[in-house]
Image 1 (cartoon, rainbow, N blue to C red):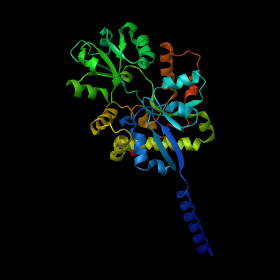
Image 2: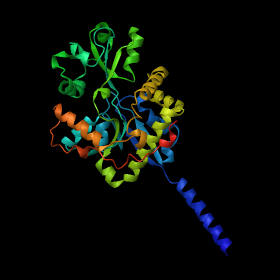
Image 3: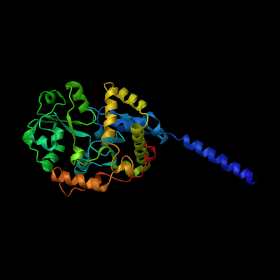
Image 4: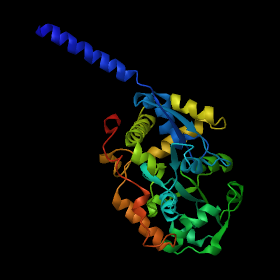
Length: 334
């Protein structure tokens, strides 16, 4: 009798496990903020190696670009998740009463850099204040340059328009140019034959998180399990991309962006590791994607000082720690 009961229990367990494995995948759309590139590697990795499927997700990555409006599509419910930039966007959403929220931060450091020519008296971050040709986009002027003015004393008259073409910077040895640590230094070295000085803004106090995962508040409230599965699977994807075999992820990136090269993907991967863009600081104990109230408060205070937000803004509505800081994936680091 006991044997029959044991057999029946074992059979039920097997059937239950089989049923769990056969559960339908939840379809999820994730919009990025630019064309596919190495800085999106963790998400493509989770897609390529089946991690999303293991978490019962069928994820479609929707690349951004110059004519895309993925953040708006997420806000109105056409996309489930969106890859945010710095926390400035998220704070601004609170200010405008847009019901979105950051649920993870897969970059501990904003990859934004300033570049200068070596040997021209512009070899330290403070030296950059000597340049009267700081090439910046309109978005850069409205965001991190305001912090540079408040924190370091830069002046508006130093700024010149930047058209995302390195030629004016290369031609002018006294110029300074914005860029990403994961791409522009290589582009300039290949085009001009010299290695520019690289100043990572995060190393000088620009303490925002970046490459965040955003969704709508209603998704967090009504389907927290979906959010948790997407955050966890994406985090594991980042560990695999950084420390494992990311060949298939690179192929998917090149499929979505045929102009992407193996050289730039390798460079981006190396620089993300060298500068601790994804995995540094709090992630060493809390896991990739980590966020803390202390960091959020520090960055918000700096943005208030820079004049971007009023001090009474309830910036804590911009994010939640509900889905991070659980140590997911720490065992995968090599």
